[in-house]
Structure formats: C-alpha cells, structure tokens
Amino acid sequence: MMALRQIRLIALKEFGDRFRSGWVIACIVVWLGAVTLTSFFGLLQIGQIGMQGYERTVITLLNLVQYLVPLLALLLGHDLIVSEAEERTLKLLIASGVSRRRLLAGKFIGGCLTLAVPLLSGFLIAGAAIGFGARDRTILPFLGLTASGLGLGILFVALGQAISVFCRTRVRALVAALLAWCLLVFVFDLVALGLVISTKSPAAAREIELVCDATHVNAAADIHSAYDNVTNSEPKAHPRESASSTPLLWLCLNPIDLFRCINLPQQLGITVPFFVALGSSVLWLWLTLGAGFWKFCRTDL
Amino acid sequence: MTPYLQISGLTKRYGSIVALRDVDFSIEQGSVLAVLGPNGAGKSTLFGCLLGLTRATSGQILKRGAAITDSDLVRVGYVPERISLYPQRSVSDNAAFFAALRGQPVACAELELERVGLGTVRERKVRQLSKGMLQRLGLAIALCGKPELLVLDEPFNGLDPALLESLQAILEEEHGRGATLLISTHTMSAVEPLATHAAVLLQGSLTAFGTIEQLRQETGSYGSLESMYNQIARTCRRTEEVLQ
Image 1 (cartoon, rainbow over the protein chains, first blue to last red):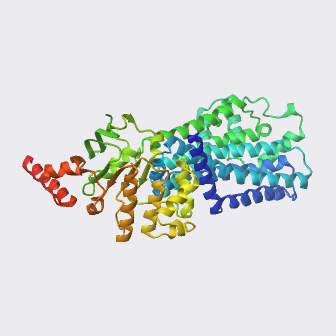
Image 2: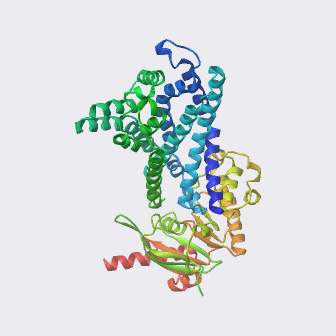
Image 3: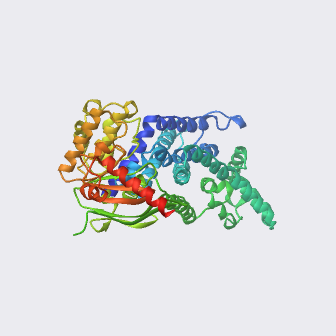
C-alpha cells in the first residue's frame, strides 16, 4: 500500500512539474499541428491539397512520428534521475523511505504519463477533425499509429531513464540521449543494410529493397507509390507477397523499425507476428529498465 | 537488552580511499549522539550508510537487532548538510510532498511549518527563501510524523544566534518526547547542552565513543565538549606519530 502510494506520488509530481513548465501544452500543440497539417498538406509533392483520409495521413505521418516520438521521449527520460541528483533532492527522497525500485517506477510512470497525455490528446483531437473533414470512417490504421507511437515512446522513455541513471550530469545525459537517438534512428538501419549486402545471399537484392522501405532510408513518395500499388491492384499481384518475413525479423530489435513494420504491413509486405512485436517490446523494456535498476542500486548518493 | 541502534564493523571504501574503517558502536533509544570530527572524517558517510544512501563495503547497521528497511526509514527524519528542495514549488507543497511520501497527512506538514516559524511564508516559492528559512524548512520536513530517529548533518552551520537557539529548543523537545538524535557538527557549543553521547571520528576511524561523562573521565578533560574533542584529537595525533 505504502509502495503504491509512493510510486503514485512521485509519478504525479513528475507529471505536475512538466505540466507547470509548459511541456505538456507545447507537446499537445505540436502533435495537433503535426497531424492536422500533415493530413492537409501531406500530398503537396504530388499536387494535391486538402484533408486526406486516415490511411494516407498515417503514411505521411509515419516519418515524423518515428523521428519525433523517440526524440521527445529521450528528452523526457534523460533527466528523470540525474536532475534529482544534480539538485540534491535524491538523497532526501531515498532517506524518506522511498526505495530505489519505487523511485525508478514512479519516475518512469511519470515520464510515460507526460508523453502519453499530449500525444493521445493531439492525435485524438486531430483524428476527430480528419474524420469530419475527410468523411473517413476507416479509423483503425490511425488508431494503430497512435497506439504504436505511444508504445514506441514508452520504450524510449525507459531508455532515457537508463541513460539518466548511468550519467552523472544532465549535460552528459543529454549528449548520451542524442547519441542514442542518432544510433537507433539512423546508424542501426545503415549498419543493418551493410550487413544484408555483405551476406551476398541470393535473396539479398529483395531484402535490400525491403529494408530500404522498412527503414528511414526510403522516401515518403515511395511509400505513397507502394500505397497506390496495394490499393489499386489485386492482392495476389503484389510483388512482395511471396517474400518471407522471417529473415527480416531482426528488424524488430530496433523499436523504430518495428514501429514502421507494424504500421505498413501491406506496403512493405512484412507481417510482424503479434507475439514477436510484444516479445521484442518486453525485452527492450526489461533490458533498459533492468540496466537502470542494476546501476541505480549500485550508486552511492 | 538489544540496543536501539547497533553499528558493527562498518567499513566504506571509495577505491583506495577508506572513508570509514571498522566502526563499532551502539546507542539506546532516546540518546543524543554528537558525531564529531574534522572535514572528511567520515561523518556524512556514516549517516549515508545508515540511511541507505551509501552502500557499506562491509559491516552492518541494525535497528533493534534487525537490518534497517525502507519502512524503518519512513520513521526517520533527515536533515542533510546542504538542504535542496524543489525550488519552483512552494514551501507548503514541498513539505506536503515529503510528508505524503512518509504516509503523513498535509495537516502534519502544516503543523511542523508553524512550529519552525514558517507558517507565514508557506505560499512562498522555495527559491525565494533565505538560507535560514531553507534550513528551517528542511527541519520541518524531517520532524513530520514525529520520527523516532532524527539524523542531522551539520544542522547548526550558518545560523544566526536567534535561529540557533530556536533549533536547540526544538531538538530539546524532540529529545524530551523520546526521539533518538544523531547530530554531526563542528559547532560543538551548540550540541553540548543536548548531547548524551559523543563519537569522535578521525580519518574514518572511531577514535572515541561513550557518554559525555565517560569520555570526560577517560580524557581527564572536564571543560567544554570542544576542549575534550581537542584533547582526543591531540592524543590520537601523538599516538600516530609514535607509531610512525
């Protein structure tokens, strides 16, 4: 009972502090603007303006979400613990009978709340506007994007918190968080592509194409073409239908690629089994939160 | 009879530096222990080990014969050497937050704020407080819920005489209701009227421990606590020189 009470207090304090600082309101505005504007101007490059349906909006929004959500989550998570250490309030918290495990749990939940409230508010308000504007009722892909975007954010809050535990100053934590973002958003895909090419397997050419589409290496226009291909042709005619998804499951190691694969199953021709996605996410959470807890328990304050 | 607090073989090393070396002592409930020693003697490390802030390299700390748990710490009040709170929050917000973490109602925090003389500034932001006010707020937070053990790290530093007197009065009241007090300080004259026991730490080792009367008899120094401490420190230095 006491444990839950302490976790709740710490989580609510974290959320309250961010709310007062304007972070939550600013993020609501960012997401509301991003979704609405993307839906309205998303097809500008092919000469169309106007509110698009949910599926088109999802495709256009994907790149923005995969870059912005991890970045915001890392910015949120990187100072969860190190800021308390720098401001010397950490000692008082621990000496008040809050165990390190409860402190980490409270901080993590508070960070997730701070990410979730603006993201869900922005997406749901903008989603309602798209529904009315484009008279579209196929909201499922949009809800999928919202849920998987939130999941992606939660995984990166956990990573940010681990960074916050390992770093001794806020500046170092910020640098580490930005490096982690670059590593997972850009470097991982390039290295993955290099590995696929270096294997020189007969299936390499197809895999390179799939990896390009499944990762940031693709351009938004390609995905729109893929969307048109899928919607305008018979299902059996899709060139990637026969491609086995198994060799690409290693993409699930990176939550950003996993997020992309989940949201573009038809366009990429990759179906990530639910248990693989869930398992990968749980493993990621276990590793990051576990590493943070392991280090925090061995840190002298 | 099991002592209230028993520290045995407590050692803390930071790499090659030994912050605490095989510290052993025990105190009964209701004692006021003055922990004395120069800067870097290991006083704060001792408190850190007691409060779970620092992991001891070896040794143990027992409260009534059992290891200290998080639920024990809920009944411990702690005033750190340099008090830092949430600067963007108000005095009462800070007090209420820390009280709630220890399962105490807001009313308890308000009561302690009144007691330390901060009742009129409870809506003021912590960043606007003077050092003395901050010190008092730290004390109010520590006193919340009538803790059975109060750990105060250099509580008399930088206080004006009036504030010093009111702090002594509050600590006297806490002692009167049966709380155990551990006070580390360089201002020995301030702790002298309160202390029932003294522990002298020099370079991480417990050089002297006992009731004030015992120590006076052992050292033959019947003057102030400060002169007794100086006598112990001099004897220790001479012993080291002879050994070298």
